[in-house]
Image (tube, rainbow, N blue to C red; front, side, top):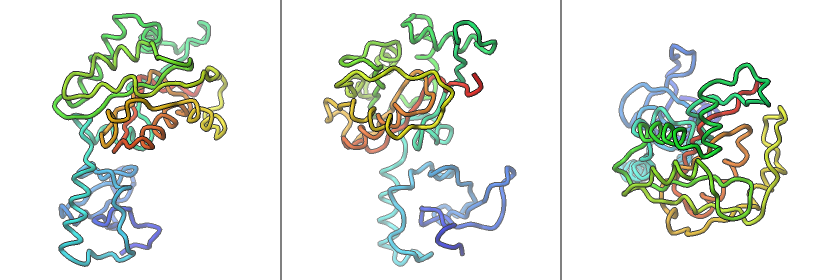
Length: 266
């Protein structure tokens, strides 16, 4: 058995003392009687969001069959329904996950600015062929037969968001997928993102972001799983603020996907 510090949050997982090929620990899942990995906060065996069902006591043992059934019921409710292959997008549920790496054009001075980065920039400029390209990319990874909502991070301006990312999101919202693209709004304009090389989230800027956002039509996202989309993330401040507001409004689970993460080298 493991110490309280070593134990994962899920009451079904225990360290085996063995290692995976990448050097990380292997766990025994007593629910499936299988040895599995432990990426982030999800179980790589059944892709369940574990923060909602930490064991209530420090015992390593499930006390009763009734307790086991209760845990299983909660687990099933938290299964991610947004992606065709949820295991590939585990990071999106804790933080945010990219489709590509974005190299800033930097006034034409960045030698790493490539065709993919150009496509992302053209989405920002609302160019139709780039919008179609990333719409198809997202369609290939998203579930088409499950009910969940899609929301979009607004730009820095107050009011209705008009962006290439909004056009992509609206194209994805075909029933049973819920169109939540206008749920997140800015109630005040915020400064545009700095182009500095500082890549960590500034607590003051995060607070400012949260206070600038408002959730409308909460009924569209309350109790639902939500896909939160943005074009580019550098520090992830905006997405973290958006996630906070959606969860505050009652979203069951929020998965954040961006077209590109800004490369830290330029």
